[in-house]
Image 1 (spheres, rainbow, N blue to C red):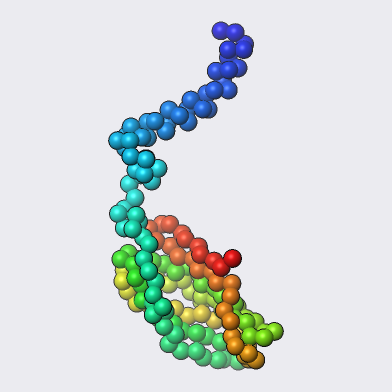
Image 2: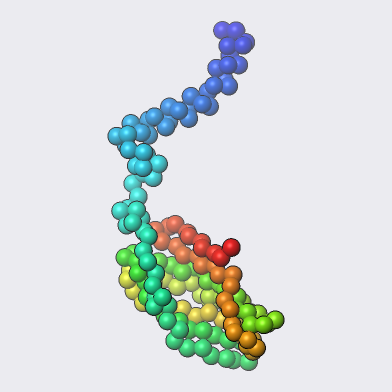
Length: 151
């Protein structure tokens, strides 16, 4: 085999491996592209889109302690599987003052369950209407971590 033929074969090898492994996955899944890409994902994961209604979060209490504020809320899970709320942060802005409220501890919510969550941060004295910005929520379910944040 000549040097040129060897160079061509070696440069084509990654493409051959990629194409053959893709074909093997498709054949193994009976030519079902979704099954070849996602494998055996539990059925609940395929239908994960649920509507989180406004009443899923209810503020139960707001307390002040020194220069800190603590918000206690109740979360009613619309999910039929357990969810771990790993992080929740958002900024409260009033005029020129702002503060960041953050989840104190991660919370495990059972399927269709209700759990209390506590957010805390530095207290501000609102001078105008309070606006909430820079939301960030991190949840985990079935070993998958999902982060949603406001751009």
